Image (tube, rainbow, N blue to C red):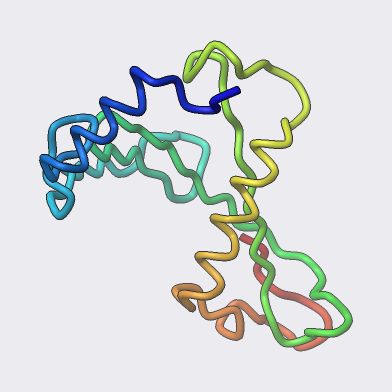
Length: 133
């Protein structure tokens, strides 16, 4: 049994040969990016990001808490993801789906490895208080 049906395989092959993506863009052509800040009233910081037809809403809600024992001087970064039913028919309300959990892990890893957030600067009082984002 073929995983990719013949008609799809032909379409993909034609696109590759033409140097195009499925949406008609060239391989090296970027999608337009639009950022709208402050879209969540109850978050300390938020934004809606549109990348082509894809939209993501992100919010940051800082709190003060205790650091982890093995990193007493570092703040805490927590990444969560909600895939809502309005985004696609397969998503359902309720506890996080495996897809939500995996996406949150990928985003978390990307943020940590990029070192965009300096966790040392989120320390308030070593071993006692840190910012938790």
